[in-house]
Image (cartoon, rainbow, N blue to C red):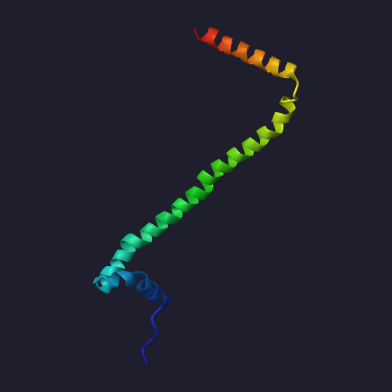
Length: 103
């Protein structure tokens, strides 16, 4: 009876089987797996972490800011014309001050 091959050997063989079908030897396919496939998979996992923590984190932070701002909006917008006129007047004064101080 021959001894059983370790599980890692089977995993490598399964990973390189499509390459073996292209005419590569098992050694060439194994080298290809270690030089191309494994680093490529590790790079993909690293990009997944970056996507989850950085990009999704930024999107979630913007969403929280929008939620916070939507809580303030009803207090500002009461529906009275005088409050809209005051906001318009304050905006015009701020714009004139900006333009005047810039020149």
